[in-house]
Length: 240
Image (tube, rainbow, N blue to C red; front, side, top):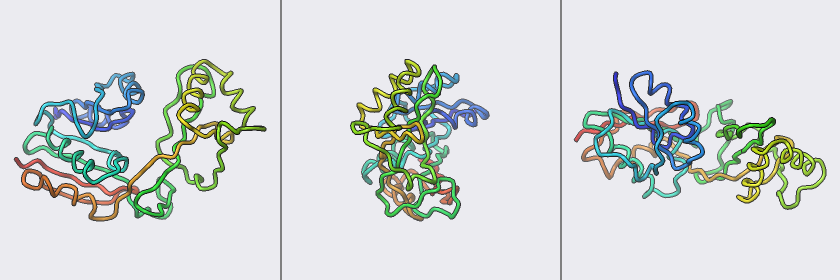
């Protein structure tokens, strides 16, 4: 300490308190709504794409890329993400990358079993139970996702339709959230009080992540690869 840390693809900024404990963490993400949560908690936040970071080269002591890799759909974009992340790290600095693993341990955190490397994972956007701002989206799949039978919003009827009507009438925030979720194609699950979206994910096997650093091996080296809580992880250092 003190360290200047880039949290690339920071989402709502849940890792920033640990960054701030040793210096200053700066969040970037292309979701303005998620960044607003981080900023509302007093953190530094800047709208930006992880494959085209809005920072000077060699301007950070360290960087984080947590749960970003698995949202990118091509190797070209994944290689661009690692190159951009390492570009903003100073010589001698390190970066930590986490991505969902294909190999999920029994009783693991996500509770999910992936049928292949390219999958669709249910994403739940809960409707506020009371007035005020919408809650944070649920970012991890739930153990019982396979058992859900969400109804399409355009064909909701019976108890689910009544639950959706009450949610819209509950507060201005809930009404706004419901309208936006419907417009985006979300499917209403009355049992969970949430809209369900199918989120694309590419999951990784052992050895996949280090391969993405091959194009920049002349100035970046992989220091470690390990498995942690359903993720494959690598630590990389900028050498030049």
